[in-house]
Image 1: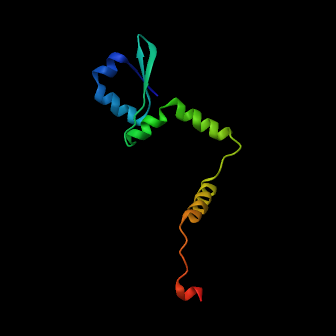
Image 2 (image 1 turned 90 degrees about the horizontal axis):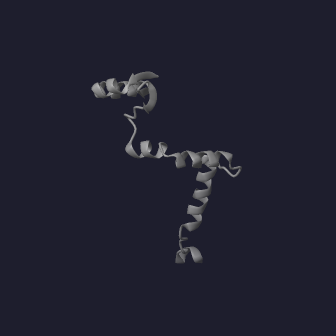
Image 3 (image 1 turned 30 degrees about the vertical axis):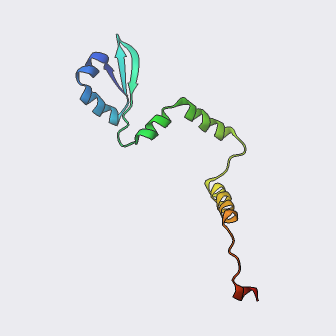
Length: 98
């Protein structure tokens, strides 16, 4: 982790942002930790917003602790069965009824 004083980070903001793409940058104010800069280039806006939300991580933790969790295959199978039941059935043609 790179450590920088706030005045240095402000003076070379573009370079500081470039550094944050490779490693976290701890910015200090008066020698004390003030913020951590983490580069997010290459990620979309929604992903960054979602993964930086503490409630998202609470949901993840709750799902990990829930004994009723399902694998991706189980979820797909469940919804495939539901979709098959929801499809309207074709009426047999007159030729088939005889």
